Amino acid sequence: MKTITKLTALREEMHQHNQSGCSIGFVPTMGYLHEGHLSLIKEARNNNEIVVMSIFVNPLQFGPNEDFNRYPRNIARDRKLAENADVDILFMPDADEMYKGILSVEMNVKERVNILCGKKREGHFDGVVTVLTKLFHLVQPRRAYFGLKDAQQIAIVEGLVEDYFFPVEIVRVPTVREEDGLARSSRNVYLSSEERNEAPAIYESLIEAKKKIESGEVSTSAIISGMKDFIHNETSGRVEYVEIYSFPELTPIHEWDGEIILAIAVQFQKARLIDNIIISLDKKENQHV
Ligand code: AMP
Image (cartoon, rainbow, N blue to C red; front, side, top):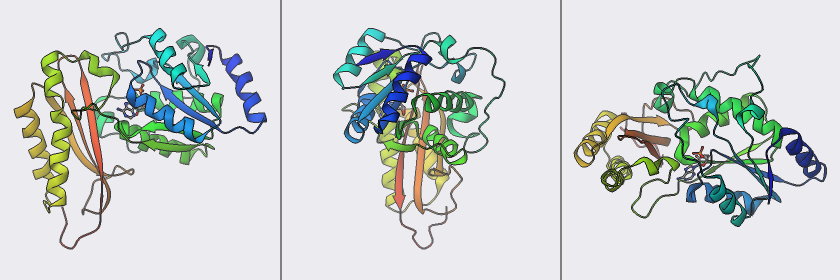
């Protein structure tokens, strides 16, 4: 595995691979790797000749009161995990390398954004699409791999790629979970041991809601309040949102039909956890919400 920190070195390296016609699979991350990231790498490894992973805690996607400074980092461990997962190129730039000065053109996400995480995390997705635009231009991947755990991110990135004709295929990778159902996340280390015991309730609430929908419950407000009550009763966390939309359009649903996302965010003392499930439904008569 080659570790690269400079733009010029990455450009040279990628130029060679692109010249030789290799397929390049790209996995952008913020590091502190876990099984979720590793499943993205595995997918990329299975379907491309060259696998590039980036580790960059992107300052632009953190709000002033968010956890940029205390975001967990462990470069030595990440490098070992990436090497063992057979990554070919690990790109780890520092912030000055990625943002040389004030941006003269800024990116602003317009659709799929003022809901779910985008509602509270103002500017977050502007930061995400900005860094991904830079990374896509540098790496020029044929495919880029994203986890469905961050489903709003996937929906927005798919919009970016479609709007601006990026020649890259966005691959959606299913959420990897702990044995008790908790979605793997770098932020799980912020949970106290009591909170860690409670946190699987987040996924349980999604599964319960899915069962209700599949067995004919048609009221979105009943589903949402059921999930909120469950989290309230089973955890010390505070529900930030429970929302239901079509996926990946992220528009309100008027009937139970097609791909539907049920998404939740719960704030614990030091960790804000998100999770979701996507349900495929066939249109049924009288199933207006
Ligand atoms: P992050 O380092 O948190 O920015 O995540 C980098 C990539 O890994 C994103 O595409 C995430 O959606 C994905 N990811 C994070 N957690 C998981 C998980 N539990 N399962 C699958 N993918 C994940």
